[in-house]
Amino acid sequence: MKVFLGQVLRNVKQFQAALKYGYRSGLEIKVSDYLKELGQDFRYECFKIEWEDLMYRTYTPDFLLPNGIIIETKGRFVASDRRKHLAIKKQHKNLDIRFVFESSKRKLSKGSKGTYASWCEKYNFLYHDRIIPQEWLKENNKKTKTLWQLSDKSVIPFPLKKIRRT
Image 1 (cartoon, rainbow, N blue to C red):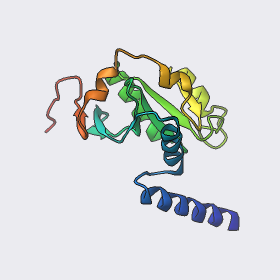
Image 2 (cartoon, rainbow, N blue to C red):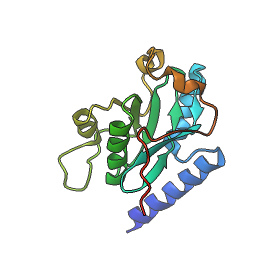
Image 3 (cartoon, rainbow, N blue to C red):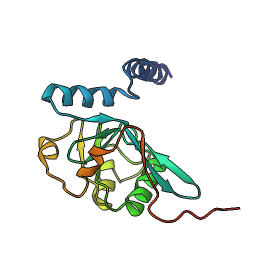
């Protein structure tokens, strides 16, 4: 029990430290520091993407690179996040969303044989552990480069006509 409580306290401290600098996790701080160290331009939580499951929702990606690649950092990759990203990928085929995990070798759930890495491979998401690879930073992605031109807090609309539910 002490280990669990210690883990919770450590996570709370990391979360509080991240919030202090405007981020939501320690991994986001590390990725941000890494990009700054390289002199790489990036935007943090600068726009929203509309998507639909049973309701219309918005998703705010973590990082946007100048080449239009969207980076989502994940420590824990829970089932609801996985469902969300599959829906977004299906509804916004033109977006290039990639993951940076603390560890892609983590199991999807207790007792599962699948890992974060195997899930990404199954659904054709690119991923890496702890940092954004240099190849991603140098990549010229003409298809999504226009994202960089969005103003802060823009919303990428749901691609189909919304149906009002009553």
